[in-house]
Image (cartoon, rainbow, N blue to C red):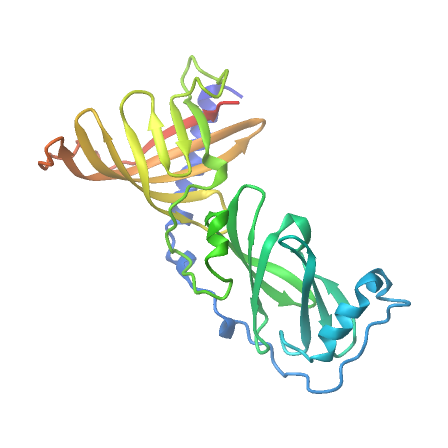
Length: 302
């Protein structure tokens, strides 16, 4: 593929993402009452068949039986059973009180540390908060449908320590801003041009991104004011406070990271700048604007 074709394709991808990311439909708050469970089971709990159908769970039979003995606590007739497996580690199983059948929940173990769950008896919605291997606090929303947890939405709330100061049950709006850029964006990047098609080292880029902002080659440096991450994508909308060359300004950017073949690319689209000021805080006229977003494409420096 020619570099020009690559650049054109990336621009087309970003334009599509701009419309998706700005769609009001993404801002809906998921709530328990949106996923009613139906009739609550009030009969006696059926125990699992640990010698047959459920034998792969036999090592945890005591914990599972204890959970079922308390009756359903989730989605009408299920019991969510969570217990420790080491430091910051827990296993999670979902058992059906009507049949005794056990189901493995998709999160748990060493891959999902500090796992905190929120759920209700009358709802199919389950909210999980945990720390991932990228040192991020992650929030995921699941619909328990036909004995399966179906992922509805994902949010990155910030660094891992955010998980220590909140619970999965704490309300979070779908468009609530956080203060850190996701891990996918962090590192050195070099802008694509006719002469540059690769970045030889992490220290030779034009743009250096951290969780709290970025620095361009030269004087310009921007700090994160707020980040809005959009569900099931690597698109963020970021408000930056910037400064450089005797000026300061606020900038709004749409940022996207993705793979194009074996190439990892960053696409940044500037939606404009506001509050332009000089070194003395005096307002300055804004930069000339033709009304079109400014699109820049970068390659990851390895």
